[in-house]
Amino acid sequence: MLSYKGQTTDRKKRNRALRRSRKKNKEAAKSDLGETSLTSSDLRNRSEILFSEARKTIEFGRRVGFEVEGDFEEAVQDMVKLVETQI
Image (cartoon, rainbow, N blue to C red; front, top):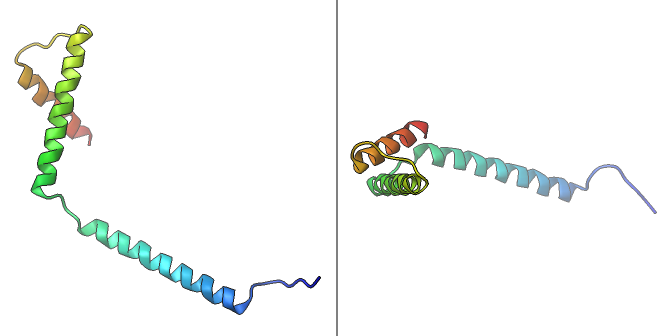
């Protein structure tokens, strides 16, 4: 059985082409991520999700025995503000 060190020229060319295409794809992905921005509907949906989760959390807290002082909606807004500062 014959053995040889190294790769054939065809394999080297193929590997080089694959590396180049991967590099181009990574560069394109980086540039795409930098240029994206949230639309107003995305922001609205995110806000609605935050408020929904805050309401569910406070309702769960009430069921397990926690009490909310003041207005329920104020408590929800306070919780949303806390979550937004963490993001």
